[in-house]
Image (cartoon, rainbow, N blue to C red; front, top):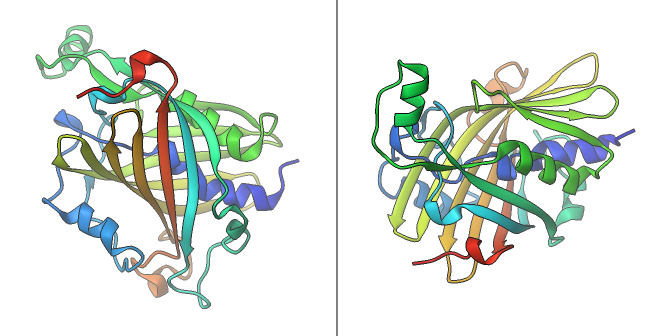
Length: 273
């Protein structure tokens, strides 16, 4: 049986790669210039959620992310802005993960262009853009979940084929985590730098009372010569169903800051100028 402690940590960590890197085209519109960069720089002084738009379809990633990467994620800071009055389950136990690197593989793959999708479905707008790079969410989600919980604890990760913003992680003992991307925004300040934010609703089922929360993942990615590094912040908010929702407002209950490094597994994956 999966311990409650590990489940709680998993709830706050799962969005690490299941969230977005960069969206473009008709899937997402850029945020106002500098807003997301300023947000990252302002950590941990976050009082509101980021400006976003409703999420539609999957995120499109930079072409230089195509391939398979060995990822190292290290929790470098965690803050509870509303403590001791309000605090998320498992926050204190997550201190055990400070400066402890977690490693797993992620993959980004090409998706048929909108023009080819339009040909097949007959009703989507035709776009002559080339094939787009998207996250292999099932592959990435499974590897991330098993890195935190162990191979035996995680049965599978499924992505809704019609709605890539909806994902289900199936765990042992009839438990499951449903993640739904509700909103997102993107920002680019240089050719080798991309910032994105996504806001999720998470539903954990495995007890008589389902557990709900909202999670934001804001990530600033920097392409380097032989790898990609990122500064990633995960914020946990109360859901509107929580009795303390109005007390907390839009202030996050927990903030987690990670340092990421994505190293290419094969030569074809090495970033190029």
